Image (spheres, rainbow, N blue to C red):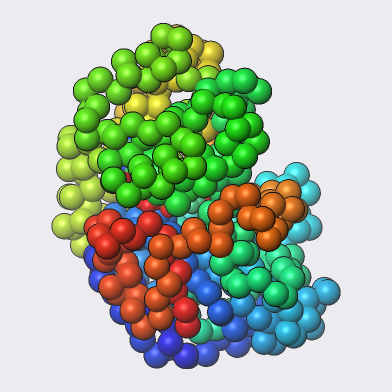
Length: 395
Ligand SMILES: NC(=O)c1ccc[n+]([C@@H]2O[C@H](COP(=O)([O-])OP(=O)(O)OC[C@H]3O[C@@H](n4cnc5c(N)ncnc54)[C@H](O)[C@@H]3O)[C@@H](O)[C@H]2O)c1
Ligand SMILES: [Zn+2]
Ligand SMILES: [Zn+2]
């Protein structure tokens, strides 16, 4: 089959790789019909290369049709239309019982001390072949799937794999009071969708989105979000936001940016160093040192009102990042974070994936390209060229 493979820093290719086969009774094989590129894939493309091997199949936002099932896949049947969550979870362990599916004790990657295995997401998360491919092997398939109805185009459902539950969890964790205010840092797919969900829950609520890319700002503004262009407010962002929030700052801040934030020159040095070293030296550097560019997190800490809540959905990966504990403690900040527990939120979200499309998923993708154009797709998404905000690949 054809699959998108990681080949090195800023290099992916579309190659012929062996077709996946059923390896365990709980496996299923999916024929992929749509599969997205995510901001998290960009971290592999740029910073997390030391945890990748050339040839690793990328992708964790697929949907498709069940092609083959093992003998223990429960009610999953050949021909079912399914979205596959980005994490693998068993549905039976102590963590799954608590709906902490990203911490599943059956799929945890103990070798690296990390949580549940993720599709197409480096050795840190199990090096499981991903879903930017014609076919995907789904481990723990009896539980790791969301059945969706026939009828609407894939666009309606495909974001259940990641964007929707991640944005949903970000908003839940942000714990915005009913009439409170929310700042969303980063208006990529995750931040954009978090704004939409926060507005859907309460259209009167003040939601402020911050980014530096004109079309991303425009897209959020068109849905009633107050936007701030960071290019114009690099130095006075806090003052501007305070001016909009009674001088105190917002009740809640979502960081939808993560480890590659714009505007952190000092720390990007470690990312650069890690990029130049051979993997054997770079991987321990990343695992022990602070590699993250922390501009967005620092903004969140500065912006949020005293006693407010920060919700981190942007991915961070450094082991020793410098954090302003004095400010965080003094301001009595509450902080929640983590990968989204996809199947926890899917039933609530499915109710909003209707013909009237309140969250605007049907035209959320800016690009729909054949799988063979993945190298171009990664490039325009990373460089924010050609209006690329969300790219869907079609095998
Ligand atoms: N927690 C999860 O389960 C989960 C799931 C999916 C994605 N993510 C993470 O969420 C983050 C966003 O993902 P995405 O797909 O929207 O990616 P993206 O890269 O398209 O979006 C990031 C946005 O942040 C903006 N930005 C950069 N620096 C900024 C700054 N200092 N202040 C404000 N905005 C800034 C960029 O212009 C960009 O629009 C990534 O870190 C990704 O890994 C987490
Ligand atoms: Zn993703
Ligand atoms: Zn489990």
